[in-house]
Image (cartoon, rainbow, N blue to C red; front, side, top):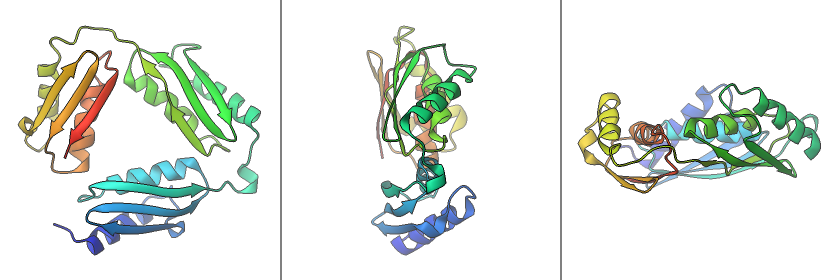
Length: 214
């Protein structure tokens, strides 16, 4: 098991390895497996990428993101420009229903609302706007419309996890309540934790995936 110094050095190395991140602007602290990222960065997209980079490091139990987005002068846009760019970005997404998602922009912070049928569509909406110039944050409040009965999906989720995970999928418990799925049990690393969640989200009509895994 890695100690805090090893974990810190691994996260720093992962940040430096990712070309989308200015690692020199980010400080890393590790304490009992919890990583804190702090500093000033130039875009929300970089903040997002830094968090994902830390999650990729084996041994990280939790992440505290204390990164401030400070847009350089050439990246600043007024809210109307950002809203127009976001509207265009969503309209170019092949898998998003037309006019299903609404946009609100307040001081560079985008809030997405509306309803779609699949989780991947909600993720596509978020991904479409998070890299826009001038954006300093995104709140994805798009909801999902239930499509199917959940009476027979538990076995399908467990089977999918077993096909893709290298660990013991039997340690992951799947419970279904209405349109919500709760995952609990033990996983060996962040990758398999993310895989289990992603598999659950692929079930049509899932409204929420509750992650109680350790």
